[in-house]
Amino acid sequence: MKDNSDTPNNAGYDLIVVGAGSAGFSASITAAEAGKRVALVGHGTIGGTCVNVGCVPSKAMIRAAEAVHGASAASRFPGVDGCAPAVDWSALVAGTTDLVAEMRDKKYISLLPEYEGLTYVEEGPAKLVEGGVEVGGRRLTAERVIVATGSRPHMPDIPGIDTVDVLDSTGLLTLPKRPESIIVLGGGYIGCELAQMASRLGVKVTLVTRSRLLPGAEPEVAEALTEALKAEGIRVETGLSYREVAARDGGVALTIERGGKVETFTATRLVATTGRIANTDGLGLEELGIETDARGSIKVGPDMATTRPGVYAAGDATDRDQFVYMAAYGAKIAVNNALGLEQMVYDNSAMPWVVFTDPQVAGVGLTEAQARAAGHEVKTSVIGLDNVPRALAARDTRGLIKLVADAKTDRLLGGQIAAPEGADTIQTLAMALKMGMTTKLLGETIFPYLTTVEGLKLAAQTFDKDVAKLSCCAG
Image (cartoon, rainbow, N blue to C red; front, top):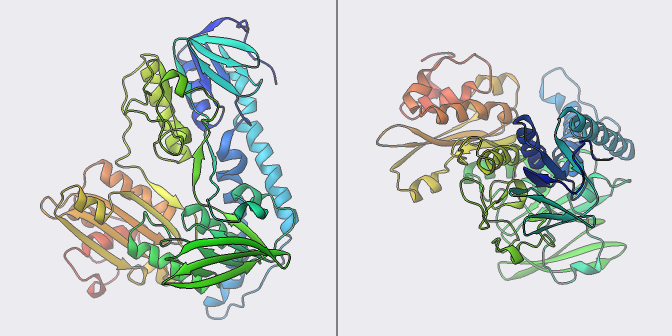
């Protein structure tokens, strides 16, 4: 792929963007649409994490696993026989790889010629220098630079882990042959998603984590997911410390300690999903006085500016939220402020997030603990899905809804849901928070019957009523 602009290679630009993932493309397109001359430096595979090794391949595999599980779980309906579809892991992985290539071309590569003034530079790793960026033996100059180099999987520091062939999330999603069994290290959203996906596709799974699953989620929601995973045959081990990893009998052994007792788990492969680390090595940040945190993430202000005048950053390379849509959002803020187009400030107060397990886990706003720490007098409402008609009709009442509100003003502060359709439900709550709604107003809002989102209305009514005593559609 070549530069797609007539701008000479050594000419100055209005903006240089380092990193061609979601954040990099968002910044570059925004600047190009404003008539600016932009150099987009690849600094890695075009498309970044999401399309290549993150959202796209993982969700494609997860949806396939859902289809397999759905067929076998159909027996929950009277008169319906469940079945166990055959799974060709190799063919599924190959098909997912093809999908990734298709979307990388459609959503990234093929878009480049559509924007006049946008030059794509793919020579290799870049380094920030005074007045611009060095890449491929040449110097690009600009008064404004945006760093959007993304992140990569973090490998935990466990004795012996470097003596075995450890898979990260990318490795599991591209593994040519299905492993007989795996140990998944880490109970965050990546670990939970991949553990369930692999289990549903026929892999024996042990999921281990130092604290509990989804440590950032409400305890009730995390417990609901834990029970759901266990019910599917996944071995979930929490509240432990890692002692050692070693090769054993053609596989791997993980030794842990819990409550003063030592245990060892064995499997064919070990999968590490213990967070991600910013791709900032070799960028020359320290030489320019650009501060980073302990994980290498670039520190940015609410305007996405770094500690170096003229240099901004966005996406997973920063100390901000690690979601693809927030990367694109942060990039637009960065480019608008960098180029003086529109003054913008990063605001994640109504940012929805989703864990694509089944039940799906989703949330927005403050947790109960966060609300109390922020000084609110808090009231909460928790209802199980057995109170939601949609779940009863679907004969799937796994999960719950929790709302958090200010006890004095009745204003909603946050909420989380664990439900098979929680991902699509959470946006309604995000809009409610965005508009500053009270629990009373949410409880009085009309919702369509036999939908999961109706559960938000019921949860809001639960602050003042016993919804178990209401008839369908009452109130």
